[in-house]
Length: 321
Image (cartoon, rainbow, N blue to C red; front, side, top):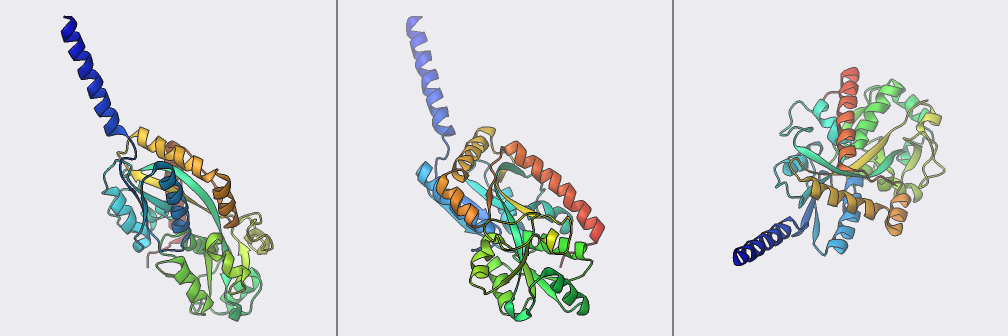
């Protein structure tokens, strides 16, 4: 009996050790899929997270840019990935906008993904080219009204924060400006500087250097209060649209069946990264506010915003291009 117990105990110990080895996370390099191009706020945050994750876990972390279709391409890749936590996606609030705006998606926004953690909030800044010769948002609104159907705004793609901000501006200002999507925010900004596009609601992180170098003129920030990265720029609520307040969240998603243990490990790592002094300093300089969360909190944010944007699309009659 004593020998049998010894063998049984050894077998249990070996089995437990094998299970622990299988559950070790991460066990290989990770990939963060990004639905927008290099230089976008989503891309900037992904690369900040990737570097710190790689250092911490001694595993490679690749940022895989798959721009296009309002980040639907990237989201579909995540929905079909193995639910082991090694493939993630950095998304913005446009992820919650797409179900109402786009007629058909190759995935279910609420069923095919699992929240890991929000990463940061980033406001937008309304910028125009110097050649437009306007200095305030009120002047822009008046110009739009004198040129009905002749002006447009750009974005980093359908469903991006810049797109949503532009549609909210149309609604609040009672104007109709045509949306022209590009594959990346740098491309949208370049076309604005060149005069092909009249204005863009760019993330502060993407536009701050261009504003400081005076290649673009900042008319207003999208939040109710001023932004530390651009303290001289007034909020839209003060610039002529009382009550206007828009801030984009950004966060990491995993495939739906990812285990709680893996999601919690990833969420804890995000919380660690965004509160590191050097990371926090860089994010704040870009106008981003660190915002870690639990997986459950992020899931709730997505569900609430899916409902919020469904109401917006219904009220405004926004149509996909």
